[in-house]
Amino acid sequence: MNTPTETARQAVPTTGAHDPALLDGLFMQDVTMLLGDGDDTVRALDSVHLTVAPGEFAAVVGPSGSGKSSLLAVAGGLAVPNSGTVTVAGRPMTAASRRARTALRRDLVGFVFQSGNLLPALTALDQLRLPTRFASAGAVKRDPMELLAEVGMAGKADRRPHQLSGGERQRVGIARALVTGPRLLLVDEPTAALDQARSRDVVQMLARETRRHSVATVMVTHDTEVLQYCDSVYEMMDGALSRV
Amino acid sequence: MHRTVPVFLAVRELRFARARFALMGAVIALIAVLMVLLSGLSQGLVRDGVSGLQQLPVTSLAFSHGVAHDAAFTRSVITLDTVDSWSRQAGVAQAAPFGSALINARSSSGVEIDLALFGVDPGSFLAPKVATGSPLAAPDGIVVSSTAADAGLRLGDTVTVDRLGTRLTVVGVLAEQHTFGHVDVAYLPLEAWQAIHAGAGPGEPLSDRARQEITAVAVRGDDVDLAAGDAAAGTESMTLSESYGASPGYTAETSTLTLIQVFLYLICALVAGAFFTVWTIQRKHELAVLRALGAPTGYLLRDGLAQALILLLAAAAVGIGAGVGLGSLVGGGVPFALDVQAVAVAAALLVGLGVTGAAVAIARIAAVDPATALGGNR
Ligand SMILES: Nc1ncnc2c1ncn2[C@@H]1O[C@H](COP(=O)(O)OP(=O)(O)OP(=O)(O)O)[C@@H](O)[C@H]1O
Ligand SMILES: [Mg+2]
Image (cartoon, rainbow over the protein chains, first blue to last red):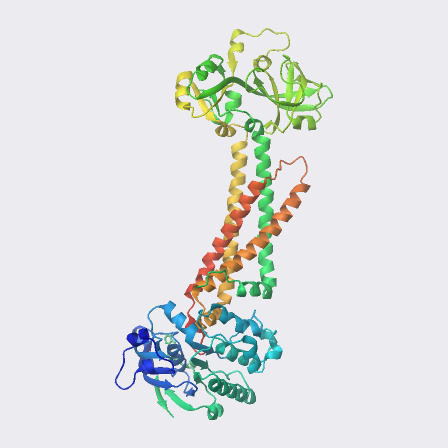
């Protein structure tokens, strides 16, 4: 386990037995987020509690509009909740400034998006090289070529996204998310565009990488087929999260 | 943190979307071609309009009081004693009489030619330095612009002034182009100029008044108090560059061209702005993904600006090259002169304003919400 920094201890309010600063993975406590304004506010997250340890692969299921993407946004510092505590490796993701949250994302969080969301102009190898160019000086940077080999894409390193299949794009997306050595991996519906066999491949790969790199992974999915590869499964319902 | 200019993404996008960027580059290059041609045309007009004045070794000219500024060289009449008054002014190093007139003439070889006659005292500082032939001295000798020689006027040719029948002989040719109001300059002794100005034909006696008349006092000096000099001499001074505006058509020509050039720069800024606005909006989702991955806004802004700069510089270089090539094909009948400095300034303005237009569009990057990178209804 990492020794949390002094600043993290000060910045995060501790509550009783749970000291979020001591947790090395994802820690969310009593997180509530309202979206929209006026009469139209939606409780996208309603007192959510969630802990995911390093090396744990957690899945979140739930109907459309229940708040799954909102959960990922808050966990990854893309959005700030109205109340509650969110830490990754002991660092508060609810930092007030955009710049601070960007830096935290850069150093601690990896994202895998629905259809890979690769940049059309870049080859598979360059997709991985780009984040290492703006990573902080002290960040762990993995070798892009080695990571591509790990996801079975070494042979197609020079291809651009339009020359790859959906499953291949998703593998490159996973490798890209891991290239800066994140402590938290957030995955939003990675198999939405894939057939059953490809979906299983991708999720198995996520499970393997989660363990190999000892990263806390949260995956949102509609695909109950793949839940067997996950360590824990949660259900989101109208913004409330419960363990299944 | 990231002090180097990031071009990793910029150059890869330029290569990947090369058709789109080439189209945009072609528009900028065409604007640059137009810019070079206009610059050449305006320099050419300046040269044809006032090169004879530009090469006068004077700092200011004193015309008659109240003369119309746009016709001072043809309308102004003052008397010789104002030269003495100006000589006494503080800071005046030299002052000399100057006469100007536009005439139609015919050379001995039958060439019809318009001339701007500059009457000067052959012993004064205004006397021109000839490249070939001899300097001003003989009462009927003229020294002409190199361009008059190009038009067929040779050393030793005689020129007959229309209506008056006065015969003048080309005794010298100047090294460079000396023109005034698109007409070749011919220097001649002040007395000969006074006779032609007064309308006196060969052998006709000149009145005492005509012997006193000149167009202006040519003044050379540092820190001359023009207002004080004017008050003392009863004249109205213009600095040498102010006097360009008194050359026929000069102000209208240059201001029209300047206006066109200003519009061209604005068009460049707007075109670049419009292109990069569309480009940035198209990339909105990619930019959100990059922001989600932790790309600092500053990194993306610098990358975008570098991309715009590369595109504009490359397009401007191509356009200027093509413009200079086209300019060299322009025939002698068109006033056209390419000046390295003028083209460089114009190119810098073009690229500068293009980047400014692009920058306004690229600034949208800062407003991209990284949360929109997540799938679903965000
Ligand atoms: N910017 C927003 N403004 C207002 N309401 C929003 C906004 N974004 C999302 N919502 C609402 O918040 C709730 C949760 O949205 P969220 O995207 O987290 O759902 P989801 O579980 O990811 O759905 P899906 O499975 O369709 O992706 C929804 O009711 C949605 O309409
Ligand atoms: Mg969603």
